[in-house]
Length: 140
Image (cartoon, rainbow, N blue to C red; front, side, top):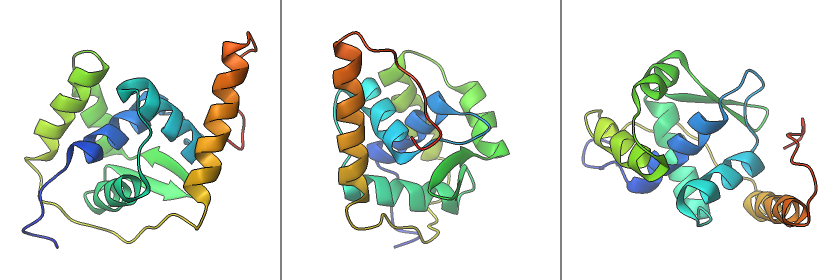
């Protein structure tokens, strides 16, 4: 659907979540789900994540390796220019994305992968709510 496709708000939402987490070791899907929830107080859907990752990879704003998400140099440049609060950043990113053509690069979630990530986030959120320490693990 390249050419006639339009950037979606969920594409900017996923990008904002990855930008919030940007680190040398990348971010797990669980971390992206958690950041997305923190930004928009909602859980991203499977089709929203898959579409966003395909599109963001297609325009070289993110890369993926070993099921982790990384900002590219172009993604870091865009991150440095974002402004506003969390929702405002999503709006700003969407405006910026809409200046780019939509291109996709193949990427899919594995069966059950999102459910596992959401369950992991819910366990972590429950522990935080009970007073546990929030730690970023190597496995996400």
